[in-house]
Length: 105
Image (cartoon, rainbow, N blue to C red):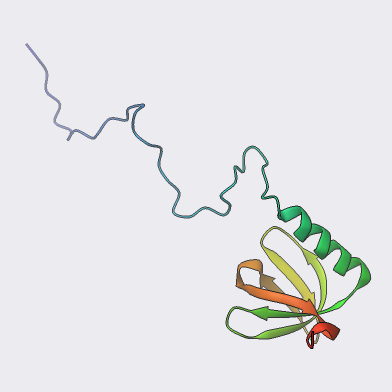
């Protein structure tokens, strides 16, 4: 004699099924292993240099807006710029940046 459950069956997890995929990934590099893209070191060096020398910068955003000021700090995803007002800028929104005196070159 077999006993039947009244609960509906759900699909059982098997080892061959792919793991659930996150809706987005912040970095294509393994976050658990601490891997970083090769150009990240150059980016960090450049930002550190501009912070230490308090270089006035112009940051051009993807939508064409210009933000002018000195970079106060940065992290993996954002920059804090001190100009007429303090602004937090996501790195993903930055098209490019340059030093204030370099726009003619």
